Image (tube, rainbow, N blue to C red):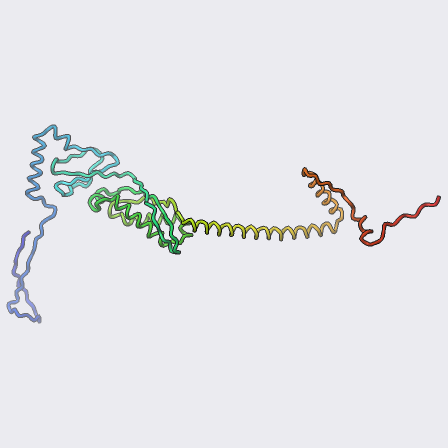
Length: 303
């Protein structure tokens, strides 16, 4: 660090001061460049090169490293990030004793969010679990900006799941899972973006309700179905009565239609395998008994 003391002459007008010289002192502080390489670092790097040359060709096994197509390597030299960003895929060179590196997998990773006890907005306790799919899009940020991106993403997913479900009712939780998953994915993606993590998909796996609540919901659904069934049966009776009324009017105008309907009923009954015996009996024979007079006997013919 370099400090410089300079005397600067300025003129001040209408400014009360106890000093009549009109002179102020300015201190300029030059901060060291954080990217500058010190003497110790240069000596350590030179010593590492010398070690590689002395142990050649055996040192090549420690100097050349390989990363796969789905991996990237972040290299540090004496704790400082090396220029050029990440390395890979393929072969890259490091110096023993002074260079360290970390591999980052770029493939999509999935993990299960443990079941979370959530209190919904309508004060119902449910247990919900989910599955999250994410991948690394910025390997440098995933190594430098967060200590463990995997554990941090898992903890954040569990917290986000509780926060999102706490703003929904039980009916919305059971019927609108897609919107909840999309909202949770958006929140996670925004929160993990500084870490170089991209959340690709979030799915709600299971919603477990208390046993008493399941029984109450089943009883409510059964009562609702019975009520709808009674309403449908009543509507059917109304339509049937109207149809029978229209049929009776048609049969009243044409007595032959009544006889045809009677015969059709007999045919329907006889088609069934039953022990019932039906004897057709005309109603005209009963009129005389209903009127109280016996049947009229025709007069005899003279011999």
